[in-house]
Length: 191
Length: 184
Length: 193
Image (cartoon, rainbow over all chains, first blue to last red; front, side):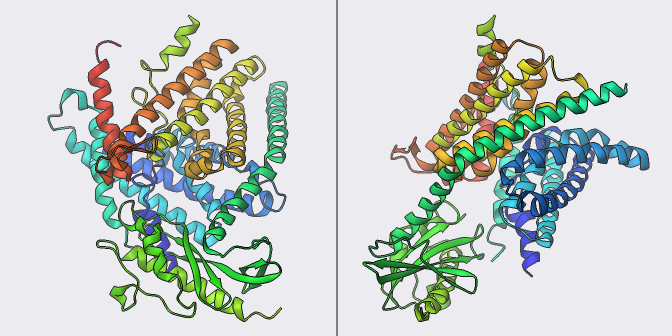
């Protein structure tokens, strides 16, 4: 039950994009069409889960015992950067189809603050291994939901008659605002 | 080719080593100040709920079930106790409170130290007007909002946040009850 | 020439409104003007520092491993700023929280390192870093001012005795305010730049 609550809270109530403001750059960049949004969501979910697990182990067994907690930021970002590189190589070799679908998003993920954000929140909240996995999965699912919903909205907005000054990014932000307003309805769900 | 790779590795290692040294230096420099700032934060919370004291309650703590009950003394005599309570039942997440109690088991004060309740609605739980309801009543009492049959005021449009405060106060109280029974 | 390095980043290539970089902190910490400015200045310190260091090291760092090297330099500076703020500006550090370490992945910092500091002299890189940083701070300050005035009815903590429209300090208000400000920016500067 506790895990279910954590999952709902991470995915819907404290949605990464719409409430915590993590990972906004790709949110705006790749949400023009549904297909790219789906691809990005899967790539983020994958890298987020793997890097959260790896950094959790490094933090618990190296940084904390040796009192090197101040190296967290630099170690975590290097882990994420190398993981992204590694994942890219593996996918390219093993599954060309998957690579064709996710490949272009992978380099963008290193500088996606949703990944580093998730990893840092895990450490700050002192989650155990299972809780960390539940939180990370919930976060990435929430990230995907917001991204895909938003891409669907933007496909519709593209066909409407938007005032010149609002064309492009401004109307996208207003749309995101309304979507965030809708997501506020989820708070209070965990009680 | 091989030389190139060695050169890359060497350059990166030197940069990483210098960076680590620099960070270790700044860490050593700032650690005392950071620890002190964190301690002061906690002491501000304790000051708000405890009567006047002259010891350091955060260091004079008794450990019960792995949690701390902070003991305030004046002139060597115990004047009050304080404990931290959390509740995950808030509208936006965890609500944390510090509850202070006098030696006669009445509550001397409650402060909310951490919350993520909605500004303008649920965050009224931090006001003295709301928190003063706890003062003077007994720590073994079970607190609840009026909607649940208790006596704590809820706000129009926000029942969940006060309910979470009651829950957090109850957890802290359970600890305080044990703390007051503690024999040295 | 040198002055242009500084002024370009202010309005013409404003990080928030034009380049749309560093939007996560721009949306997250702008509930009060003070927080917005503090976040902007912390980023400026990292940006100016990393530009100077990377410009100084540009002949030493081999081209192929430049990105990891930049990340190490930036992460070091961020950690230093993080520790110093935690020690000496503790209350501000608590509010900005997670978004201080996240300066590492702020696209502005790596972007300026890659596109400017790696090709230009130390002094020009310093000016470029300061210009872009202050432009970012300006963007944050404007967004934060709008949100604080509308959402809390205060400015820099001083009450304006206007009724607060709470939604503007909540997450949806951040998106709405930025959308309208960006439209205003387009309206004002379109054609001139």
